[in-house]
Length: 70
Image (cartoon, rainbow, N blue to C red):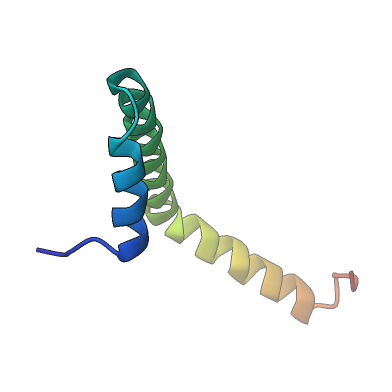
């Protein structure tokens, strides 16, 4: 089991001092952010094949001198 970082402990200590409704609001924000990160990670993982194909296409176009410098 991992332990919390000092910064996270400090943040949670401050949140614990808030009224219950504000604690719940903070918890909802954190949980939504964690869920968003999970969705992003899953989406990125699923797109690896497509990203590889796009990279190969871009490299082929560059090798064929069909690209322009930015």
